[in-house]
Image 1 (cartoon, rainbow, N blue to C red):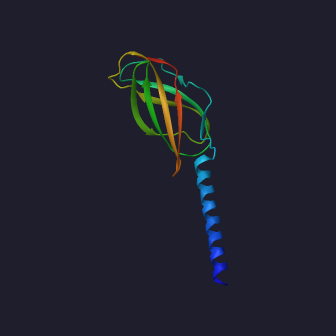
Image 2 (spheres, rainbow, N blue to C red):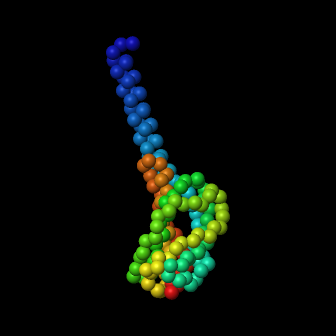
Image 3 (spheres, rainbow, N blue to C red):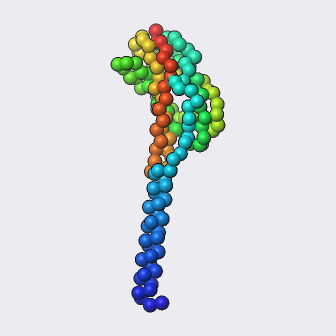
Length: 142
């Protein structure tokens, strides 16, 4: 093989490899993926009145299509105030189900009407995160 043919072969191989890599990265970034779909929004609250320091229970009715672990952050939300709860690892199994979730109400919460705002973040791959947001019905803290 002469020098020019070797150089052309190397250049074409390199260009095809780079184009293939770019297509793969674009696939990782933009491929549509459905992880979790809520069947009911807002989620139903089973304890409409909760004492400070008590527990609020809400029912998650959702279908999970992929087996990814998500970090879940819950916020107690009123019109003027948002109080963050702890960050936990999501425990919804793959498939459709209803599950009761228990969240402890901080004893320092002011009395009033609240709802929970739930944010779930899934690490899809190295380049991509998927953030989903849900809410609950209103409940009262006394």
